[in-house]
Image (cartoon, rainbow, N blue to C red; front, side, top):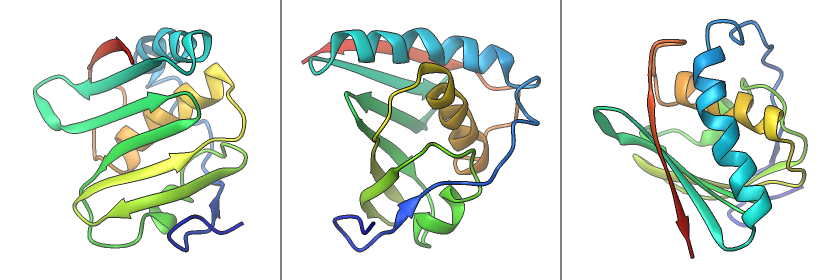
Length: 138
């Protein structure tokens, strides 16, 4: 499937070997994702790394908008993350953001993917970063 900006459907092959190290982060992320799913489409979760406001992600209904600090196309980086089904890149701008559309909303799978994004794309140390989580009603 092609994304709105010519991106392909993205599903990674990354494993779950970081789950143990990232258990605290996944535990921080899961309640926010649950709130987004239960409050859709009026609830937005913003996840920001403590002390690093340039490392952020927002989740609204089936949309993810996240910091993307790289020049290269996100497809290669995101394809190394755990599979998230029919994840589709819908837009991006180098050194600014990447936006994705989700087909399925599974709380645990999405929390694992978000953690992997913070580690693999935003270069947070696995198991050693903490998030400020806020929920907004739209």
